[in-house]
Image 1 (tube, helix red, strand yellow):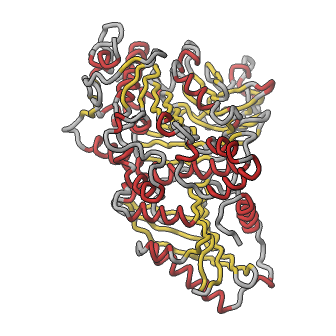
Image 2: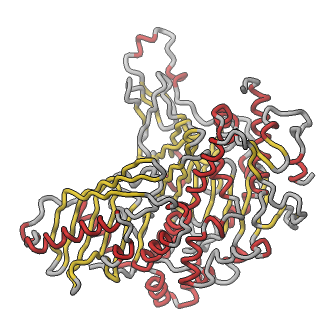
Length: 447
Length: 190
């Protein structure tokens, strides 16, 4: 059964109606999944609390006892590197009175001490000390007071995922076809290791986290939402990157792909990287001087190839529910509330690349957030407001290319549609519905 | 003086300049400006703020030199901008593009436009040679977008140069005090 046929069905995969089926009808999704507090609360349990969630990159905690703090569906967690290169994901909540134990964004610590009553935990979670413990009586057992740990922690080539569900499928199964594209992204810069220690930009938006996920795979909006940026670059630099979003761009070599389990891809590489991406890239601060310096050092041809690694990757890889690879950045979605989300844009460098390439990568990674993401954010907030405030119009339209027969299955088995398709939303919302229905059936207590 | 070419020596100079500002104690007596230069540079800062608040961005651009930089770091630790991402690090060309985008009528992040009031205070100045001036000041920006009031705060580091047309801006570095934390819509002119 093709995806859009699945989407048209009103019953769950096993034929039984699910708790969350009512939020969908063919080509439409109900606003409540973006605006209702109870849906958000259950997402934090069933999606973020039960499937694989991206936590961080191994290069963020390179040394023994390094840590960063993150969240898993609002739960504060610590990602720490322990002895023997082990990675720990700890629920950052004291087992005593519930206080957040570690309140720093990052650092280096072998142990964490709660500021309230000084209960102390190792960075593997083990409880190491409770002051005046005699008062808990003779059957006091410190071993039972460890910080809760994520049930599963796995790294895929540096990308660390965690799950609170011990029975979750293996990470590589979860990644499905996204694995191939993650490999391609990781190996892009002459296979130099990607390092995530070049800072991040954090945008807080007044929008549900899925509004941002929707946009990440929306190949319909670029020429319209980003017209201000595209016009400036066209006027100054001509037919550079992203100018291929013009006319009937569904005819251009740009595609949308369903990678399974709610993961999707927008692939601009056939347009952007057809020849030299560096030549097609619009101008960044330092372009001429860096090109000159590298050409002098390495020769013009090799310099051009090195500089390709400073350009955008040409793909948007969306890994449900919270990891978005865009250009050279790793984007992480952090839901704060039903209508508040932080979007983290982690910058990346290439370990061993010439300084000039990494400096250009920095300027390149400021480019879209500054000239494009700001306009996207305006649309996120406008969507959230419109959905929240007009109860008479509850349905959101996700019909593009549902009934055009424009899709086909590639030789690699991956379903592919024109770039402006809404299949990204249909695909991940299909995964969303399956996970939420299963969660409701498992816990029997959803509203 | 930075030459605005954004090559590796430029980044090293920028990094050293900011590290100097971050560790500055009392201003050395031999770097205190004379009263005339101080007054002229203060006038430039006040004009700069007034032009932003009046949305006169072409006139604002004219205050910057050809080799200028407009920089909003994404950290508060004086990180090396060649290895660490910023919110913005514009050369003259990029700064012009920024203004062109904002004035093109289709920059949705600024429709409607964010209204601002810039307040500069705690102004300190250090001469840099005969014709250069480093200026540090605190800023408070009161903003209103779509009826929502918000503030931005931090310190600016300016590098000014005496030119035939008067003092001009070679560098404006906007150091948001919470640059490493979540930001809302900062797509107006800081």
